[in-house]
Length: 102
Image 1 (cartoon, one colour):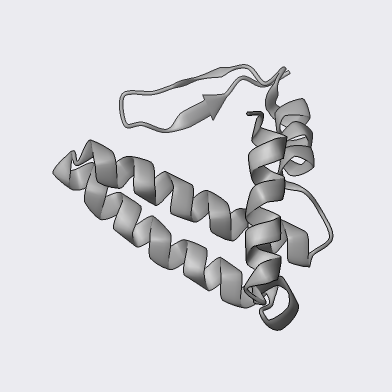
Image 2: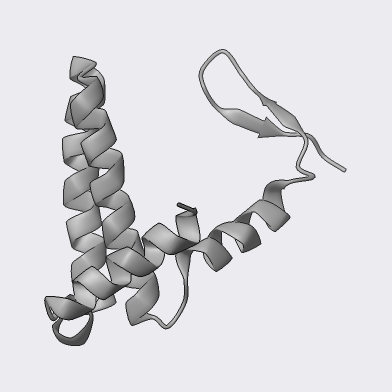
């Protein structure tokens, strides 16, 4: 199953439960931030099952934000990748990405 197919399944699930119709992008973003907190906790604890669940929960919220904004997450990812694909640089010892100037 492709990412786009799963994305559509999530949208259909959210529509069936009134999430797309009765929520808004701000509420879904706040839910995504809450799920990020749970994901952070799972990463700190090195709980692989909870990490998988957390990443999935964040993605569900982002799919909802995109749907509410009449976008699709696959398109957003493609746009972001097009912007970074030729970016040059490195991750320094402090974990900061240093962009190479053109």
